[in-house]
Structure formats: structure tokens, C-alpha cells
Amino acid sequence: MILFGIVTYKEKFWECKSFQTLYSSYKESGEKEKLFLFVFDNTDIEDWDLKSPDFPDIQIEYFNNKANPGIPAAYNAIAGYAKDNNFDNIAFLDQDSELPANLYSVYLDYSLKKYPLCVPQIFSDNKIVSPSLYINFRPQFYDKFDNDELPLKGNSCINTGIMIKTDIFFKNNGYNTDIRLDFSDHEFLDRLTAYDINMKIMPVVIKQNFSFIDNTKKQDIFRYKFFIKDLKVYSKSSKKPVTMFFYVDLPRLLRLSFRHKSLEFLKIRIKS
Image 1 (cartoon, rainbow, N blue to C red):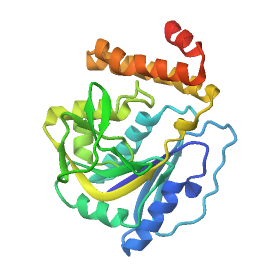
Image 2 (spheres, one colour; image 1 turned 30 degrees about the vertical axis):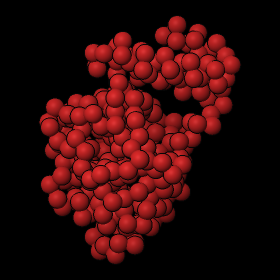
Image 3 (cartoon, rainbow, N blue to C red; image 1 turned 90 degrees about the vertical axis):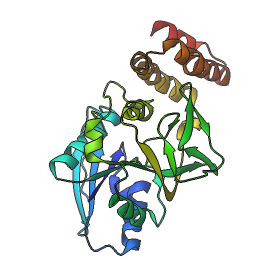
Image 4 (cartoon, rainbow, N blue to C red; image 1 turned 60 degrees about the vertical axis):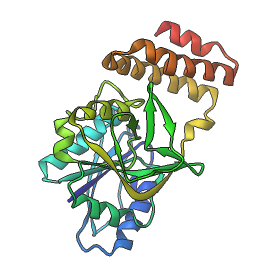
């Protein structure tokens, strides 16, 4: 069985793109067993009250954590529920992914196989952004895949759509909750390389909107503060702080500073 997990923020789960397209994919598959879903809602609005429509063909576990502990904490909670309720596979989704009609059928098929880690192909602006090569903590994108399997060593992928065996997830000690957002996927997969497993690429294409590309200066400053905190944790765990500084830290600082023609990002970095 697969437990699908969607992490939401300030959006009713049944109105988010991931839920709607997942549900449509499930209906398209003709599967008679229920769709199992865990919604972890990070919405931190005090009077946030959801009265969900009835979905008789979905078993939904809903949890709202107003402390907004971040993506890794949400994934660990979803995985904990999967383990306690004997789900063999966990598939993680965010709220704004456009999932294809074949997704549910393909995931169901691959869940019955022994692959420890299966990943979809993520496209943004008609380019493959995940899986990707991962060199010096930076992704380098593939134009195409020569086969449907990649070694974890030297490659990585983003969290969206990954399906992992529950026992492997816990063998890897789950996600690092000291990282709230940035690098959570790469840090998790870095540790997973210790088990000498490959990622199986499924014939599933997911369209992803990376909204931060159009961020305002105010939004980028808010986001950059979280980036720096996550960077410090990842840098420490990777034991390659110099490499991370020159390939990740400094380029992000320069890019944001030039984009907004502001020294505010430098001031934030110095104070951090």
C-alpha cells in the first residue's frame, strides 16, 4: 500500500493543485481500493478551520500544526503514520504540483516492486529539473535520461513525488528536522548513499511551478533568512563548509544582491 502525503500552507487541501490532480489520477486509474492520504497542514493562522467536503473513496488523515515546523518535520510525521499503519511505501507531494493522469497507476505498479526509491521526472519551463546531477552541492540538469535508473552517488532529486519504502526511510533516520526547507532533500539523499541504492526513474512527468523566481525583494529577504539557517546546518553535516561557501552560499548572496540592487542581503549574511 502507498500512503500519499501532501504538505500544505494557507490553502485548503481539497483546493490545492496536487490534491485535485492526484484525485483525478486515482479516479482515472479505476482502482477499487481507497486512496490513502495524509495531509500535513503547516498553516499558522489561529482561527484556521477546515470543513472538508466528503470524499468516500479516500481515507484522509488530516493534521494541522500551527507551529509550522517545516517540510522535514511534516514528512517525518507522515512517515510515522505510514509505519504505524503498515504502509509499505510513502509518496511525498507539495501543494502546487500538477500531477499527470497516469500518476496513480504508475505509482501503484512500482510500489509492488522492490525498488527502494522511485522518483518522477520533474519539469519546469519544459526542462528536466529533477533528477539531476549533483556536483559541489549544485544541480546540473540532464537533457534526457539514457536509462531509467541512476546511482544516488553524484545525483539527487527534489522532494516532490519521491516514493520510498517505509523501512528504508526509517533506516535512514528520516529527514533532518534542523533543516526547515532548503537542502532537506539533498541532505536526506546524501545520507541514503550509504546504503548503495539507486533511484528508479518512473515514467511520470510532473510540472512544477517554482514561485520564488518571481519573488519581490521583501519575499526574497524573508526566504533568504531561512536559507542561511538551513545552509549552516547542511554545511556542518556535509563537512565541506568551504566548498559550500564558494558554490552555494556566495553565488546566492551575489545573485540576490545584484537582482535587487541592495546590500540588505549582505547585512543579513554578516549578522548570521
